[in-house]
Length: 423
Image (cartoon, rainbow, N blue to C red):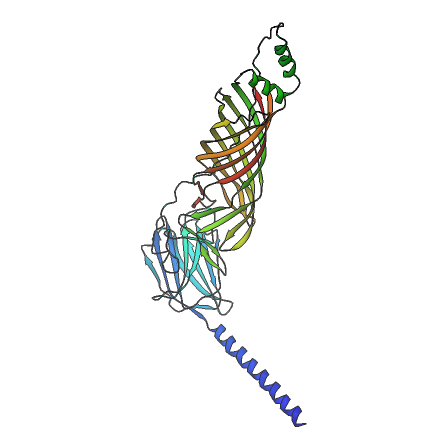
């Protein structure tokens, strides 16, 4: 009986302890957050509104029209000071209103002079201030509610987005395209064989029996083939992941943090193009190439968090190439070379979690290196297998909100099958 009473007392003590901890945690959570100060300042073409908070809190920011206004809802928050400080802030905000909501919550309404987009950021406390909710208003139609301008290279927790003027975004540049190239065969030189020389008759008969044998026999006669050619190619393209960095914008991942960089992962894509060139007797080939490449977007990574994405990254490149054909003494003709030119890189209708993100393009310098092998299938046509490494200078773009970002070099690896005709 005593053992049962002791067990009962222990169970009761555990329940009371747990209940006390829950009450303490509940009272701590119930403590309201104070908005100690609200102030505004014109920055560039827009206006920044800053709410000084005593602690971190949950909040939502959205816009309404007819009339134009921005609504800020803060959970478990009260306004301890009802004075709004204006620091030459007359561009967009006509007035500020506030009222309790749902008992313990607070709603702040910014009445606007005209339509604007709202971008916001909750800044962590520093040594000389507490939490800040910064709402940046810019004259615009689109709403980028998860980004706020800051000066490049500064950490938002240590620098107020309101106290600095974001530089004007620069025009976007674009990534470049890859080009490919095909091998070429020799056109047999027309040569009349005197009937009196049987060895020449044998060579003439052998020319029609095998394209590879015809090449070897032309070499045996001392022929050095040259001439123009036209080729077509296509295959698969692997595009390296592309890292991009905003000029003056931070991306906010709720519950994780902010960053100005994101990385785009892409699926294996395709390529196709054409070349026209001339092969010299020295075995050098000079050609002009046009190639299109495209890769679908798989996902976008921000601060290690992967977001579903759609759209594609493609490029169109116009290149001037120089290749050298090696003489192996067989029908196979290995070659190596490279080229340079220009490429236009396209970010086509890219969506982030179902929302339009970017649709832009840029033209940049491009270069490539490659190697392959060709084999004749007729006296004037050959097939080829090629590899190309293609790279561009760093392109720049603008997202749907007009904010600029630069991407790493467009780098791709392509494997292509080609068909080339010699004139």
